[in-house]
Image (cartoon, rainbow, N blue to C red; front, side):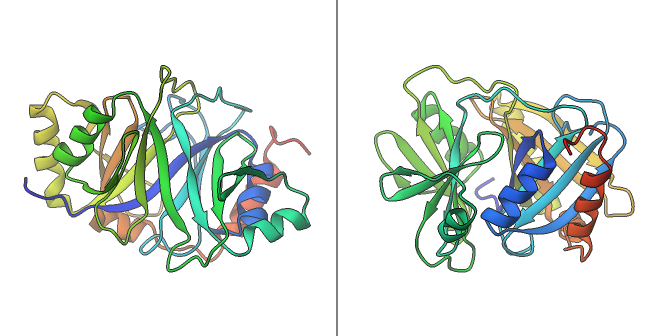
Length: 285
């Protein structure tokens, strides 16, 4: 393969309290609920982690998934928290409104250089840049790595992402410069993914998935899940390939054709989320 026509889709967070996270992502960050799905048992691709129980998936973001990078909030019923590691760096968002909303609701804000840092109820960091958002406010996802050279070779040479910027301790990549970028930053201590580890997802044409699988297998890369199909009740079926980079960061490549149909915005998504929060026997009242 000489190129991969990939599209950055979303990052997956495991969350322990849907009510608190709903407030943070909707009221503080100002995201919309785009989709909400309930499942009776675990996902074959471990979308909800290694849990074979009832769970839900909520997609939130600043616009439709066909044109915006979004967040997937994964909730496992009965799991109230996850040990946080140091594998996830943060998500950078351009916004003129988030800090105002945080002040209005007395939500804690820390400073780090020219960025303001908001921490989600589960400990995930969001770096807010007080500037106009552009077409997609979510600018960058940062993951930590242990060996930058090995990570660059994997993401750039094997997965065919374009290098947009590089320094001594980090590298910024994307399949297209207009998409939300991936920043890989070198850690000086051992990396710990703990229990809260996430997953980044990209869409590619279905015809690319098998050649990509073959390339990764040939290179001796880690394949967590070979090409498998996933069903969502009442919605489109998709085919996914789940990989892991040299540091164990999970990467999902889903077929663009199926995902484009699956990811259509649901008009009642917010109401569905609120309904299931109110009915949740594990939710603190």
